[in-house]
Image (spheres, rainbow, N blue to C red):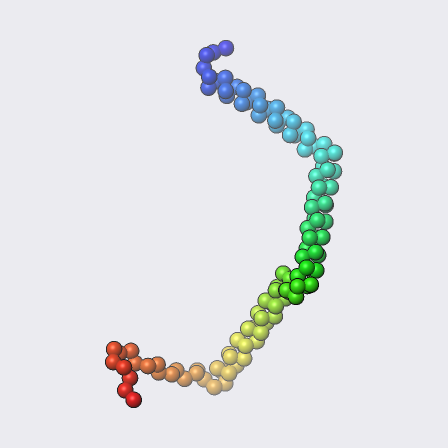
Length: 113
């Protein structure tokens, strides 16, 4: 054995990595780990669903919109904007371009009456 502390540390780190990889690989391949991970995932999804329903009920009882309500409103507003754009396009095609209105003159003098 040498007196080099960095070599000792590298050797110790290498041994620790091999042990961790071996343990992790064996654990991840086991059927019990897979079942427990699946169960934890299912429980998490069930809790998220229950929390979402509870939030919807709480928001409904306080007369506030839920996330789904806001998404529905956003979709409806998008449809209305698309309809308005079509109407504006049709009107512009039928009547020609809209006349431009001259704005006020940009001078330092106040307008005269």
